[in-house]
Image 1: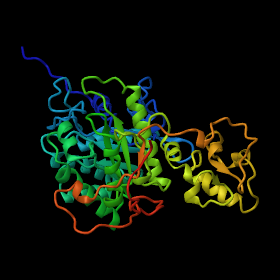
Image 2: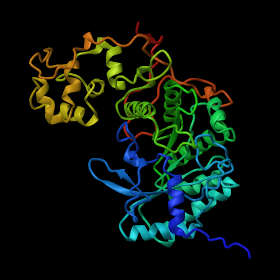
Image 3: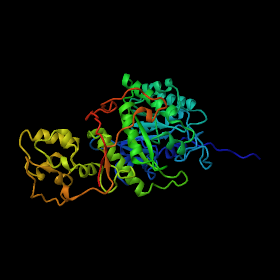
Image 4: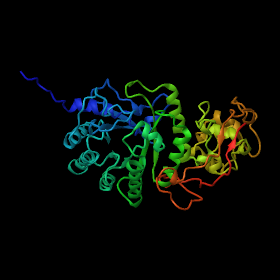
Length: 445
């Protein structure tokens, strides 16, 4: 008597395909702390919410996002991925566009979710899978009249028309580079071509966003620690895609073996955390690649945050006068972010700050900034904060800053004639400092 094959129902598919999507880090909450943010975690105890991930809103609060694959069938063999073609243990399932759209809208009607992130394995043909992703988004927009957040993953190698349609439907699109250079990508994803499959598609998406589409931004992700890539390798590429490809932000996912699905080790997560901190400095604080500090092996210092590392390498610009410094100079002070800097500038017009405690109302982190500021030329000697004075904390041996950025020919096959002398990040809403060459790197001995 022949065996009976029981096909998985929608709930089982959601279990499998959302679990497979958990390491595609697309939410702002993914990096909320160095121990692995909530964007990686579901709530398996709640049957109705075990597929939903919290995305933090600006300020307080969060909204639920369904993060799911259209299918986990994949023709690729990427070493970091649990659904590669060589993973025999994976149950291969997929949603039809109608199934996924209906399942998601049921969650919307129950007020469990406010948005969806759709990624996918490559199937046997990337373009046919991309057709299904786009059809799902079309059903949500036009059949269900869903006006909320949709994030679509653009698969490697798909056509320009696919990207154009995705950008017309989604609020955000993303293309994962995974590795900073072709050499590293070949080692972890031998079936992908960085220039053709990824960079070219990223250029197309950026161009469409610039011309005006529903999608207002594109993002990317790097796998951290899958090979011997350094933080400098990663951040040079991050700097380049921000300057040239209209990319809004980068995500970083600490590598874990596809055979070992346990959470990443703490060293890997701390490195990931430092990359996120550095990325925030580049996108919102006016830092550029030549400002960043690395050790002699091209890695970000793990012992201190990247802004403190910058301060220790550049003691000549500290202490910063709170009552006189402009916004860009204030943003170089550890403990002062964009909001605090703007509040400082607004409040000092009414009354000058006299001591560290006066800065509490700005939201600055007093314990971090105390050693790096002065007030109308005077140091606050009565501060209760015991952080060592700046010039008594010399940097570690071998720290380096002043690294030069990639030019296009370092990543693309064909060199681009000419060279820019300045840039701003076109994909960012907050444009800050212009890039200027800094000459020879600064070494700390």
